[in-house]
Amino acid sequence: MALITLRSVTKTYPAARKGNLAVNALEDISLEIEPGEIFGIIGYSGAGKSTLVRLINGLETCTSGDITVDGRSVSGVPERKLKTLRQDIGMIFQQFNLFSSKTVRNNIAYPLRVAGRSRAQIAERTNELLEFTGLADKADSYPEQLSGGQKQRVGIARALAASPKILLADEATSALDPETTHEVLALLRRVNQELGITIVVITHEMEVIRDLATRVAVMDRGRIVEQGEVFDVFSNP
Ligand code: ADP
Ligand code: ADP
Image 1 (cartoon, helix red, strand yellow):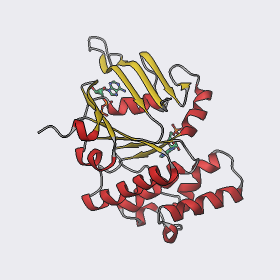
Image 2: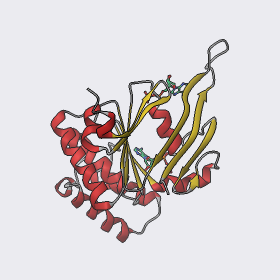
Image 3: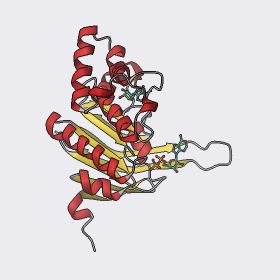
Image 4: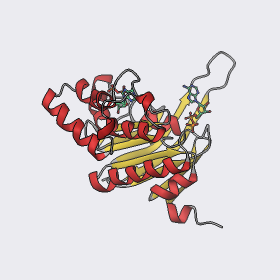
């Protein structure tokens, strides 16, 4: 069974003011993302990628259609039930979204504190993630003391802290230079291969998809215009 399923999902934003048109951000989107795969979603700005992300993690509800994550419906569930959903999904962002007043260690520990884990559990899990992401010697540094690539590694460690099944990467390398992008993509590949975590990569960069993903959906103005194996979709001359 697919881990993430979207069936004929539509999202319309109401007109911001009288006389404006409503925006059809997503129209008839159907997708199945399998456990263990790296699935890419690519499209230009305005294609609907961020809207799709917000629907999958329950930050917004779809106008019509149906979304399930790990067998549970996401569409129209009450806020308190979304907690379980979000524990299944870790997120990383273009601007990293680290807490600037917290050390690397405390950034990574944050989701575990929120989840009410014990001190011992938090210390153990945080150390494990510092090792896994190669940040052990930066544990007591603050984000402003880190390079972009190191910041994103902290972002990845924090996203993994609560042991999610899915990692959603929203333009996660768009603020990084090519070399650092490679380093972060290599870490994401390890997250997938060594930890078995399903990754959804949202990007406007074809190179990122080519490098990392196995399947891809190409979005344009709210629709999926092509979908399949990366090799097939991008091998057109
Ligand atoms: P992308 O992430 O691919 O750039 P978005 O999902 O941000 O695309 O946007 C898709 C469309 O929906 C755009 O036309 C955008 O202006 C519109 N949109 C996004 N968020 C909102 C919102 N909160 N209210 C109204 N329109 C929105
Ligand atoms: P919740 O309401 O359950 O705290 P959020 O919507 O705040 O969920 O968070 C969604 C995802 O973003 C989760 O994976 C969470 O770990 C992560 N997250 C929460 N707060 C932040 C933050 N300030 N910066 C970056 N990521 C965050």
